Image 1 (cartoon, rainbow, N blue to C red):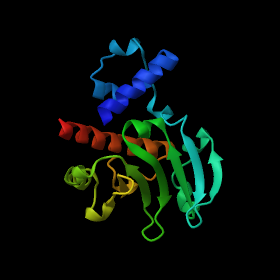
Image 2: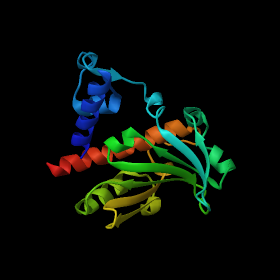
Image 3: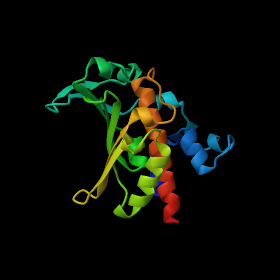
Image 4: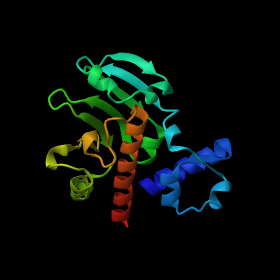
Length: 198
């Protein structure tokens, strides 16, 4: 899971580029010190994590692609989606692959007006109790801050949760900052699942 995915990412990056780009979250997980980071690793600025991600804006009703977006879209405030309620943003990133998540979408909920995050989480069904407990503890608000359902055909968890319920959320976030907040939360979920594995 996380440990294996991160090791695979590092090995591939070091083989292809001579160095692996990681960020503070991965550095802490690997137990690296500042002196460790000089050899074979580049420590990146969190704001740049998703600069290489694939981004597209779509129409919520038709799921039609409206535009493929450049990294500049990450600088837009998330309030963009309050002004364009029919739109969502879809992101694919190697960083989501590392933590076992499919592409992650962000949109404004039509009924409640909060920001919704939707993704597929690549964890076995046996992690149901762990996931529910972690979501209950990790998301602020009542138990309706998320929806979790296992798709046995795909072998993934369909997870929808409210960005507004994440610790650290505030209305002034940029799209990139929102995705970084989501990544940190999902990284912690993956790290906890790894520790459950033994």
